[in-house]
Length: 158
Image (cartoon, rainbow, N blue to C red):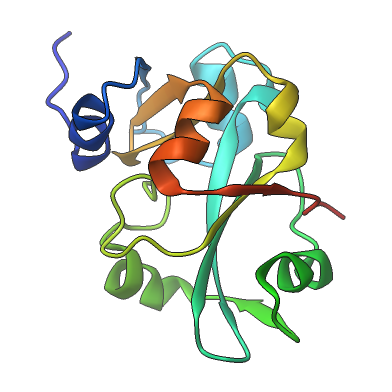
């Protein structure tokens, strides 16, 4: 099956980053990270979700964590140098990122927001994140993702 390139894939191509593409059937509506991991036959600890939050300063931050994990908002705020961060309401995700919930890639958002990847990803050979479209995931090395989105590794989980 041929896959039309998403904006995230085009950006990785521009940066000459090697990545793999995984597609999955989303007609059943199961697009949560754990379901996606099972559909693409990957361990959940290798599949990451992209979360978007806003700090007290109104700045927007991106957090990339394992699909089964929960973001610790205190640790997230500390990583961003904020007093407090709160998750962006789902209705605002597209306005800020250009992506919809369930298809939000850390690569190719409308702006390059300060981005943090949970430190556990550093030990992985590859990690899987959204390709920017529901039904598509990209697999790449954490170091390559870090370079492309100028991310910092941080302790982010509860």
